[in-house]
Image (tube, rainbow, N blue to C red):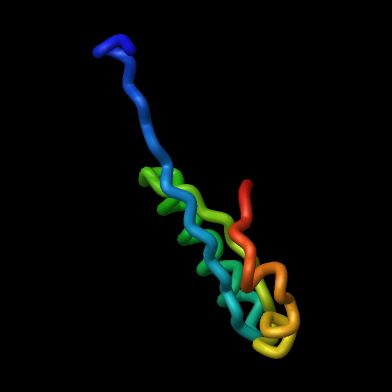
Length: 67
């Protein structure tokens, strides 16, 4: 590998936003996306408006998600 080749590793993080207020979910999602742009992390963000819906979604709770 060439020493001048810059390898950038991005860490992928699954984030669940669960809030009954849509504006709060949108604001938090926006802040996370803005942070993601300037960091080495990559986020997969899933939103829920109810905890009961989140708890029923076993795919989200058990499996890593890819962008």
